[in-house]
Image (cartoon, rainbow, N blue to C red; front, side, top):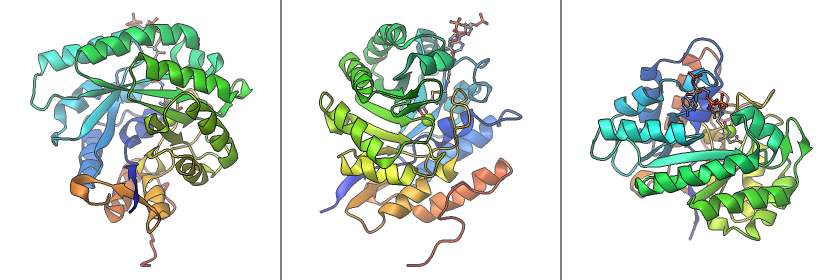
Length: 314
Ligand code: HMG
Ligand code: MG
């Protein structure tokens, strides 16, 4: 029997688009991307962020995106919230647009393993941010929202260098203790090596059950697929990825996109891991390749996936 691995299609519309330069991507394009991903079998997808549009202009239209998606029951359309203001805005939207199913049932909170990165990303040190997030997570849970956590810069920080895995363990544990159902460990700069991923995952596992961990790898130095395999070997079964390799964090200078969904699906084909999509069927690799080519075309470039557009028929 195969080891089930949860679908790597989550972060394209959020991490994938938040860092795009130039004009703001139209709401309809974002909605189209999300609906195409869901059609291809993705069941967890980030629809955007309730962050300051002054800080991240591309996520400014997230309220409209949430309103316009033709929702499919059973799909989690998560949104990122950095602070209580973001959560309050979301709750206000949910209250003023009651739908069945609701516009969303999931938020993601995010913090980092280093103060330097967290200050660049959300303008406060980690301990202060964790203190604030406690209230955010509690309030979200009271509202019936499930909460996912992110820890950024788990291996290297663009401002303070090599990160101590113990620090990642402490921050991950804090997020789980406040009620996050899952914590995604982010190689934000995309420079981690597979052995470094193993090192940090094994350290975090000392205090957090591996079933609550996810891996989130950017691909700046081309090690992301290797890091996915390393995370799987350490027992992680949830991998974040972005169709067409879109993405990057605006506050991580030089970092490139996430590992591409297509490349993860391709690497795992025929392996002991099965990537489950909708109705027990695998996520559709051909459909993902088409989506990656399409969205990168909209953005005026070639797809960032290395298995597309040519895929060998064997
Ligand atoms: P600040 O400037 O310190 O906040 O920013 P403030 O409280 O002083 O407020 C400044 C202004 O922003 C005020 O408006 C607030 O009302 C407004 P003004 O009076 O100037 O008109 N404001 C907001 N507006 C909308 N939504 C909000 C909100 N909060 C305050 N939630 C803040 C602090 C957290 C807002 C800012 O730093 C921010 O928005 N940061 C977001 C950064 C971000 O989105 N980064 C990317 C996502 S994380 C990521 O990509 C990593 C990940 O992929 C994993 C990995 O790869 O590692 C997840
Ligand atoms: Mg990221």
